[in-house]
Image 1 (cartoon, rainbow, N blue to C red):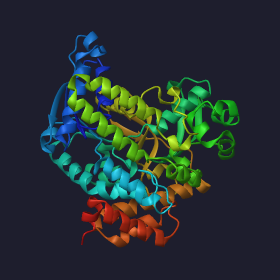
Image 2 (image 1 turned 90 degrees about the vertical axis):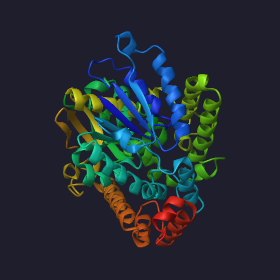
Image 3 (image 1 turned 180 degrees about the vertical axis):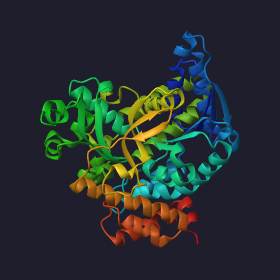
Image 4 (image 1 turned 135 degrees about the vertical axis):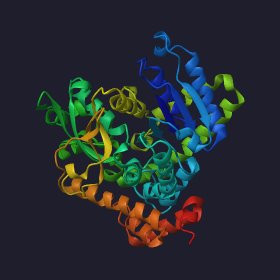
Length: 453
């Protein structure tokens, strides 16, 4: 079986390869094609994977070789005959992300890569590239499953459905990790609970946690000590979670505590994008200079990256609890989905799929983030509890913004782009939206080119 990773020079690619090395099943992945437009980054990650393959791993213990690796800057070569495609590209790189953040922050508006105006800017520069990638995939690997990790994951997946149909699935580890943490806090085995979760990517809520038909969530959210044992409890506070009667995805912090988030980010020496840009530049340079140390350098950079995630939402100098990131990230979700699709081993997980029909109040074809049963026949959305009140309103408003952003990327219309910015709940006026759009068009070459007419 062949797996193609688009964005193969990306920093998190070794996480995926590590998950493959842990999989000793006879029908696991044999070939991995790594595609990237940056040959230098691609070469560094290739060396990291070589070191991983040469070390101890379950496949070797089972008498199976590590998956073969092909590094290429040719998209068609990478995709040809692929069975599974993992899409994890970052159009414009981290330099683009820092622009997404700073243009907004200079207007005292949230600057974050997927939430608010930064997410719209990220989408505008990414959508044309990913739609072209999807067209090539449909031509050279029409039967491949396309698992999208590229952010904004829900928006990108929505735009690819008309090209790839029901073979494109959006993956994010945030809701799965939330469900795992909540189950442990409730004293249950995460493998046995059903997470009643609904929303959009980076905009969803855990509204129920069922074990053998019993909802464990009400007792959990009513117990401040248990709520504080998980990342979301420390982000939002037990009182607010008890008020909601649900546990929000960690990215809802930017909606529920907007002013605090903006103040914290503006008060930091660097935005998250600037921190990652410096860190990754240092890693790739060091690994190029000392190839034999590539894996060790990667492990060190990864630990620093994980511990500082969402740092703006925590007290200064407080790092993330190791328990919050235990259990695997998006690579574990991806492997579970891939295994279910290719081996017929069913799994239930939370995915981004075109299933607005299961969430009353949304278009039937809207890509939403909901529990899904995955098996050899495909991905089957499961109906969560309906969203109501502010939850439904936020989801409807942000979904409309996603659709406007997709349209703006297709029409190349400044009017559509301004409308997308103006209608986002974290943008405070039409005037601000116009300044945001002009700022992104002037300072991000890819967005400037898109709207050059």
